[in-house]
Length: 76
Image (cartoon, rainbow, N blue to C red; front, side, top):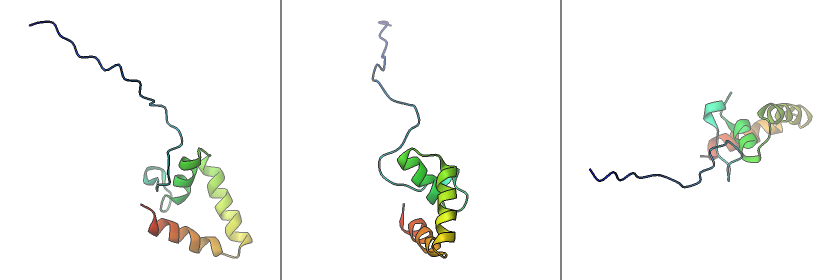
């Protein structure tokens, strides 16, 4: 053999971070993956997003439930 070696010297960023655009994150989902998708898109902690949704639902008399369901059904 000629001793040829093929090396991949391309630089790839394999560290997890916020993704571009919104997607449902079903791997880390509790219900539909909406909160985990929002957290992944913005690089936030998913627990803070979930707590924010609960507080927003209580303050908004349940209106965020409709928003959550709409996002869950329309996204991805």
